[in-house]
Amino acid sequence: MRLAFALLTFAALPLLAADDNWPRWRGPLDNGSTTRGTYPVKWDADSGWRWKTPLPGKGCSTPIVWDRRIFLTAPIEGKDALLAFDWAGKPLWQTVLGPEKAGKHRNGSGSNSSPVTDGRRVFAYFKSGNLVATDLAGKILWQANLTERFGKDNLYWDYGTSPVLTGRDVVVTLMHTGEGWMAAFDQATGEQRWKVARNYKTPPEGDHSYATPILTRHDGKEALVVWGAEHLTAHAAADGQLLWSAGNFNPDGQRNWVAVSSFVLAGDMAVVPYGRGSRLHGIKLGGSGDVTTSHRVWERKDTGTFVPTPVEHGGLIYLVRDRGEVECVDPKTGKTLWTGALPKSGASYYSSPSFADGKLYAAREDGVVFVARADGKFEVLAENNMGERVIASPVPVAGNLLLRGEKHLFAIAAK
Image (cartoon, rainbow, N blue to C red; front, side, top):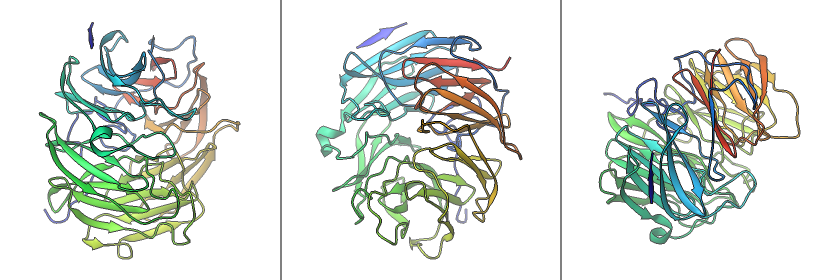
């Protein structure tokens, strides 16, 4: 139902968007950062925002933006749905799909995965297994249910990996106990292009991953870098073929080391958090076959993040840990450049931080959004209470900060 209203080269690719778009979960460069625009510091749930619009149901996906249109996923009366809003917060359309598979956990939902767009089509995937492609007006171009096709997931938490676009396909990944897989579908038709197994033996729950792959290049061709099951791997985008793999992220065989946080790229270095927030690894991209030893540049056993994905900005990595500790790390060496801390609370951080205008934006689960100076020096500038829980990540785009709460979508601009 629709409601109308050249040598080895590895780098994150801005293939799908202009600077003023946010086409996927972590933005046009997959790093949670923008270099354009001026962004707000102080606001609250009752004032200081451009607009606030109600949402039809609980979802934790991060909004995406293309050409001043905002897309997100949410349930509507027990069904999965893809929604669009204009730049003033007015609903444009709602495309309702099959039955929702609701979240099991307080900070989860059936709409955890963020949609993705190439500016022509919007793609969304849900915990239910519903995969859909629409045009920018919300018309369904094709849809499939991957749970019916490939089987149910057995993840302990609610599925949260977002779909990824290559030049030709949309790629969906599931890493859990049993048969893990990656599958690619033609963006225009939904035809299955390829499906490959991705299985590694791990301690209990170590094969569960909620991380999102990143599109890169390997020897001049598109490749997907994937994190989960205690391995960082690269696969040819054309057919899913394994190009290289790095393992040994859990040499002591610790149980329940699930991969929640995604990795982030800084040039040719992948910074990989693991160990439920106790480990951080620097893996140089490239090579062939098993690169576990040859491409592990550094390893930290005293820091990391469990849930929030790090930000890359200006060649540096910014961590916001689950309890609000902040750290700036040199991705080349793994050394800490400075540390800071957000105000203490019983609440944790499930949202991934974003970086814009020299400021770090971090949303705590209880709905308090912190703005901190993080451009060479750490200083908390403001504490903004949204009045409702926030799990989705802040989106700084085109001079506006979009925040998806449990009940509303907010847009805030600098004064």
